[in-house]
Amino acid sequence: MSAGNAKVFIVTGGLGGIGGEAARLLAESGAHVVVTDVVETGGAAFAAELSADGPEAFFVQADLTEEDEVRALVESTVERFGRLDGAFNNAGVTQHEKPLVELTTDDFIRVMRLNVVGTFHCLKHEMRAMTGGGSIVNTSSALGVMALPNRADYIASKHAVCGLTRAAAVEGAPLGIRVNAILPGSIRTAMAEAVFGSTESAAYLERAAGLHLLGRPGEPVEIGHAARWLLSDEASFITGALIPVEGGLTAGRQP
Image (cartoon, rainbow, N blue to C red; front, side, top):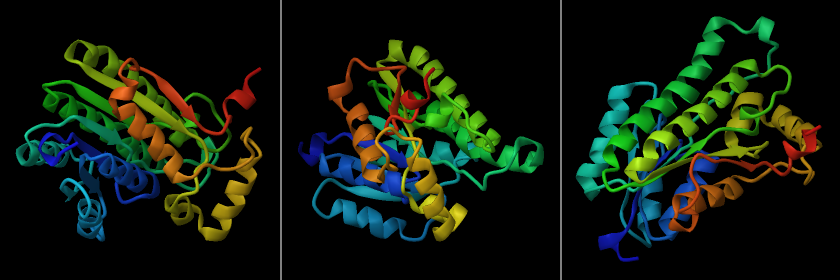
């Protein structure tokens, strides 16, 4: 694919493990990639790395809970490249495990604002910009279709992302826009270490591995491959789907 007809993708949470791997895979496939994250440090350098051997990439710092910032992100993408072909709405947040009765309203709203309101803002402005059709992938979670103890805020937010995905797929189909969600299981990411601490994160992943049929946590690149495929024309007959990429976690818990 030449730079002149390269597709254009936005990747949110693009400086994290999953988002970063997805951005690399999209760039390697010959696409322009617009990386965005709430954290600015390292963003320009990462975009330069992606641009080194392929079409131009660039970084935009944005807080997805602020609609004006999401609007500006999408508008700057279209202004720079002339169009938007797809997006991987991957930004999200988790936190320490707490029983529902110990969650504060602030705890709950913080998770819902980024995981749900942020995804809504992205869908709204991305779909408006995809005048020629396109593909959107949202990151939900295996906990978007099941539940475990002590994660009520996160579970509620990821169930909501599944609902938003299907609603957007229904409305996007007449416009030529496909919308799907990936449901990761436990993934070995820096975010998990930041939330739990490296020692506690390792212990958590070891416990979680036993819940997966494959007996291990996933790697960020495995989620990135799924996102790249769903964004591609190879997945042209898939929309409104909730795709488990979770080592058999949900299958292993079916009655």
